[in-house]
Amino acid sequence: MKPLSVSPAQLRIAEIAFWLALASSFFLLPDKLTLMSQVMIFGLFAVSLDMALGYAGILTVGHAAFFGAGAYAAGLLARYGWSEPFTGLVFALVVSGLLGYVLSYLVVRGADLTRLMITIGVCVLLFEMANRLSGITGGTDGLQGVVIAPVLGFFDFDLYGKTAFCYAFGVVLAMFLLVRLVLRSPSAWRCAASTTAASACWPSARRWKRGCAWPMPSRPRWPAWRARCWRRPRSSSASSRSASTARPRCSSSSCSAAPGACTAAWSAPSSTCWCTTGSRT
Amino acid sequence: MGIVIFDGVAYGMLLFLIGVGLSITMGLMNFVNLAHGSFAMVGGYAASVLMNHFGLGFGLSLAAAFVAAAVVGAVLELVFYRRLYRAHPLDQVLLSIGVVFVSIAAFTYFFGPTMQPFTLPPALDGQVSVLGLEVGRYRLFLIVCGVAVLAALLLGLGKTRYGAMVRAAVDNQRVAGGTGIHVQRLFFLTFSLGCGLAGLGGALSLGMLGLEPSFPLKYLVYFLMVVCVGGAGTVTGPFIAALLVGIVDVAGKYYWPEAGAFLIYVFMIVMLLVRPHGIVAKKGVA
Image (cartoon, rainbow over all chains, first blue to last red; front, side):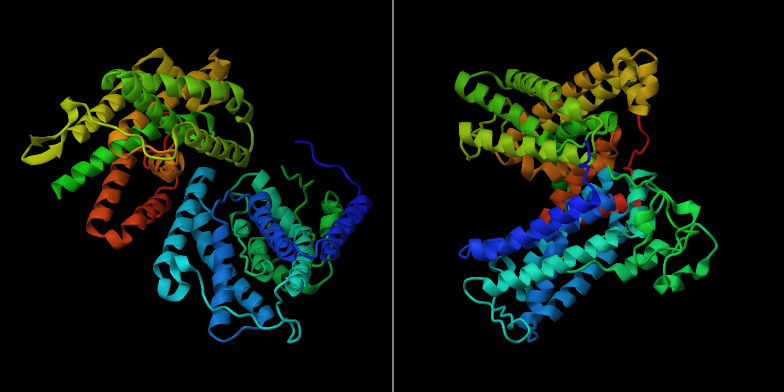
């Protein structure tokens, strides 16, 4: 497939136009706000799946497990007393991230087909578990009695979904920008390259599963990811991990192939910088 | 105990019949074909219609099921599958899952959502005593069929010229092509053969699992499990895996009904962790 060729300036304009169009639905479609919030939630879910499938190359069909895990985490937290929405998001993020981390030891192995099957199996097991533990999860009736407190203490979740829409828009936009920032960092290029090159190249970098939360998917767990991607530097500079706050030193000739990647905030030192043209196919 | 193992083996034979075609297509073409159950369903419906509406005998219906599924498989290979042999696995998965949904909708439209009626032929009805066990004749027939197909495939792949070509192509497509084997045509023939076997299995499942339009989705995971646990591209691997899966599933549902439904998934995950490339991992060994 031929990739779209747009210049960075065009891309920026298109992005701004896209988000403005999305925001304008608040005024243009005032009676479809609940639907639009769901559209955005699933949009972020698609972005997260793209990270696992497109960037990390993990052929997964069980990604919705993390969606569900985050939903149950936030929902249960709200049900048992703590209904502040943003902490619910963070909690869901942590739970799904931990689940993804644990499952990564099962998933990231073998061939594509094996991985596909293991993700199916894990998904079915989690489904059965949620089904059986009806004392906690409500079983097939669903989780009852979840009340989320007003956002920031002021904006109650109303019947028309106005608050939900604004909340969803804000969180999704923030997460999108964060994910984009992370994916443009050199370590992400390295992960993408490891899928196009030999699969054994950076096996640890593939543990990129991230979770999603309901009502909003949450951010990727990048601190852990950063450590993982750097665990096996190609060079002897073992101190590189502590240099995370240092500005990038990637301007050397060894990294001319991916200059854009190396100007991101969390760049690897030049000796470990992954220099590739970074074609994602 | 004995009867549980026997039922598990019979169930496993059915899974083997359907799964072995999938194993060969996956091993030969590296094509993740999720629509394999749809070909089984085509065979099953062909047999069912022929028996119920045209009064054909059971044996002839089985043969017709094989042919019908093989023809449908051949057509789909020519039209769709051929274009995606070199594509990303995700594209293959999307195409084949699309075929699954289209087939489910089409069969619901034409035949209704209910289970197909099926009456066992008198010769296969009832019980028979084997080694002190009262076993169903139809299940015994399934086991005989499975062993016969296994023997035929092993002989065909091991001894014939066509089998040698298939093994060569599974081992290394490019070299096989270089020696003058028409790999594309080989793919086509093998895919049709695999679909035909699936159709045969689908027709046989009429008396064991029952056939309804949701069949391909309901048993999809089982077919894939047989292939993955056994090792794609082999014949004996899926055979062993199918027996294990059948026995574990039946025994799990029999002795431990609360957990039986997902015991099989635990089994699969453990097997895949122990042997990520399948029980018989070596490609091209028939």
